[in-house]
Length: 222
Image 1: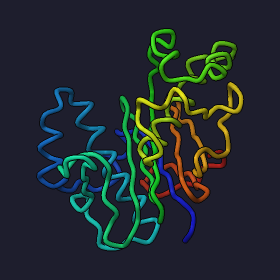
Image 2: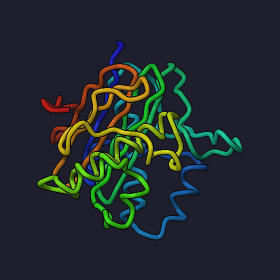
Image 3: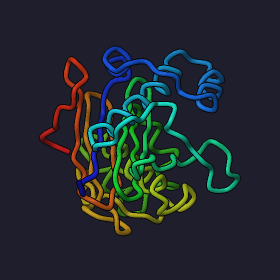
């Protein structure tokens, strides 16, 4: 398979339909440090959804605890997810009751946000001048901003740039649409109720939700 596979879901649905598994001690330790029960649920659900995406791609025998991370700077067990034993690159994200996870044969990044910050406070830092005009003129400025922000976060996770650089990286084609490509990565997005998700992938991304039983359900718009 040459495509990238990206899944988006509500955390509660993931936790209800996908089997509970140990996360592994490094992840369990990080999860225990989260103060909010909702944040802990999101943390666990994102990893379960990542396993589901890898299984759909053809990875066999993968446990949630096999999803490891390694910091590019210090080598610690946090930061960018490590490719699976079957060679699938993995990325995931979570935000206030929603999760996204993706797998690909090449490096990728995914991100999701369910709540827009005060755009006026950070737009000058994270948007290009042209993007600020597009967001300000959008019929729904919060949605337009989240579309840009999640795409830029996805590119950061894919290794294209750092958060310090996103203000110079253009991702919006219009106030309601992403550029098709940026820095050699295909950009795509999906919306689930109040959450906006984006993916930066080398291959074209196929987007999925989960049906009532937790099985993959292809999304017509991704």
